[in-house]
Image (cartoon, rainbow, N blue to C red; front, side, top):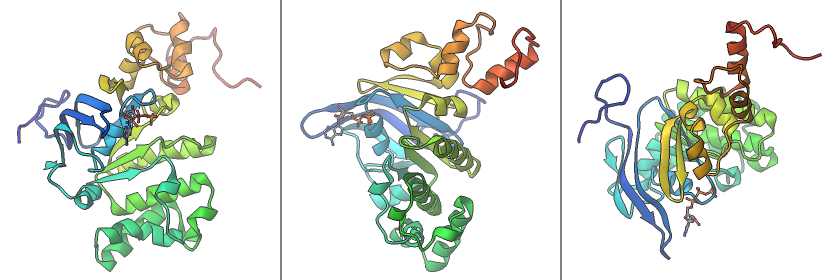
Amino acid sequence: MQKQVRPTGGIEVNPYISVKNVSHVYPGGVKAIQDINLDIHEGEVVAILGSNGSGKTTLVKHFNGLLTPTTGEITIGGLNTKKEKIAKLSSLVGYVFQNPNHQTFLPTVGQELAYGCKNLKMDDEEIETRVQKAIEIFELEDQLEDNPFDLNSSQRKEVAMASIMAVSPKVIVLDEPTTGQDHKGCKRVLELVKMFKEHGHIVVLITHDMHLIGELNCRTVVMNQSQKIADDHAKVVFSDKSIMEEAGLQPPQITTFANQISHFDSNQTYLTVDSILEWMDSNQKEAVKVGSRS
Ligand SMILES: Nc1ncnc2c1ncn2[C@@H]1O[C@H](COP(=O)(O)OP(=O)(O)OP(=O)(O)O)[C@@H](O)[C@H]1O
């Protein structure tokens, strides 16, 4: 396999996910993605952004073999997705659907947590260890006998994420993780993405949630009309007006605000309120008092 040079660090590392010249045409003729190239490495959190129908879901469904390229090639951990069984690919790439009802179907949370591991034919001891770890991380001890459908949507989403965590795939794909979540649920998603990264997972998020991307401060891929039109750090992408306009996207409100205020460093893109407060502190802008209004 050809080695690729990472843009930073200068060390040659093979990407864990390698998408090469991939197009996908659905039966009926819709060209959902066209000539996509994308490398994702160990340790990365990557957000995939774009308007409805731009091809985000089609692209990520290729990572676990739910779809295969019409043309081009995808390798996951060095395995060509066209040649591997879906079961093998799902042990490497876990997919958390936007609607947890699409992936929770067993009568208890405990059974749900073990399902993915059982499906991959792990032995009982291994399943017990993995499920126990997921229970601890997600603090689900008191809910094991509950029916997932008696939980609220935020809790059900956590159960879906915990069952993927039990399988422990290298890559965790989160499809619109904050959609339908209240403020607490959104904060929890942010924590979980950080936690997945700390546990050594690559996280790929499909999202329309600019605030989430701002908080994650992560690599951002923009899809538009079935093509990849940007792939850079969120700060670079959000400050590129032509890309944002082409894709019909709005940066987080705090970024738009900072861009309009001459006080702020015009060479910087501010993604969060905290980054603005930090700038104010370090520049001792006394004209603008930092602190909450009473
Ligand atoms: N199973 C399918 N059969 C035919 N066309 C499809 C199918 N799934 C998606 N498409 C079409 O492929 C294109 C890309 O869809 P896709 O769902 O990948 O976009 P998306 O960016 O994820 O959109 P959204 O944000 O609405 O989920 C759209 O034109 C869509 O209508």
